[in-house]
Structure formats: structure tokens, C-alpha cells
Amino acid sequence: MTESTQKRATVYFDPYLHRALRLKAAETDSSVSELVNDAVREALAEDADDLAAFEDRSKEPELIFEDVVKDLKRRGKI
Image 1: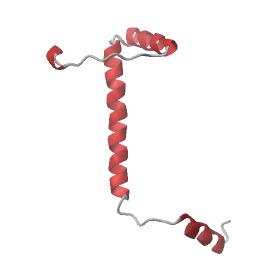
Image 2 (image 1 turned 90 degrees about the horizontal axis):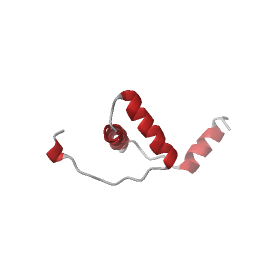
Image 3 (image 1 turned 180 degrees about the horizontal axis):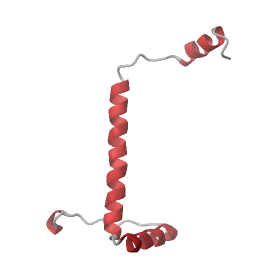
């Protein structure tokens, strides 16, 4: 990413998280910004996967809780 396309933000970390983040940055020869960007990308990718799963499952029939419980009882599962 080029310098001109980056955006600046102020983020406040709990002191113990900030210390751990700085240590990890030093250990991995990365910057704190790189680690935070990677973590945010990963979290957003997980959100995208979840949204895709919700979309896929939106076509499934809805189950009514009471009916499921009655069916389990009828089949001797509870």
C-alpha cells in the first residue's frame, strides 16, 4: 500500500494489549500498524464468510422451536 492511500486513525489499547502488540511487532519484525491491519483484515474476512453462510442458509426452511422439541420427545430423544 502506498503512503498516499493510507488513512490515519487513533486507536486506544489497554496497556497490557499495547505492550503485547509492541512485543509481537518487534518479534516478527513488523510494525504495530501492519499487525493491526492484518488483524482487522482477518476479522472482516471472517465476517464476510459468516455473511455468505447466512445467505446460503437463508434458503433453508425455518424450524419452530416448539415443533423441534415435540419431535424429539415423540422420537424418544428427550
